[in-house]
Image 1 (spheres, rainbow, N blue to C red):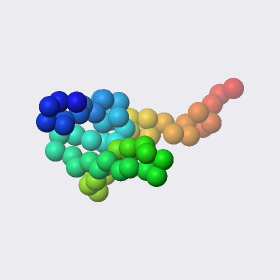
Image 2: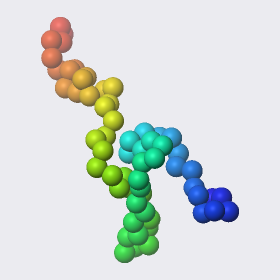
Image 3: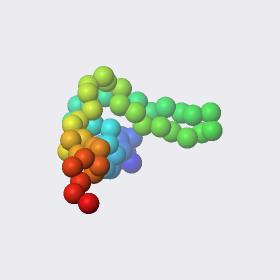
Length: 63
């Protein structure tokens, strides 16, 4: 954490949430004392390069 209270969000987490420069985020406190990070804007999640492969293993399999 910087002296200004800024934190760095790891790249895998940014990628998972679709957070980019200028994205709005929320920190939510749970009753158990955990802090959750969530996107605050309603922009669509980024396209997954694996989405087109979903369910492909069972189709046209020659064995």
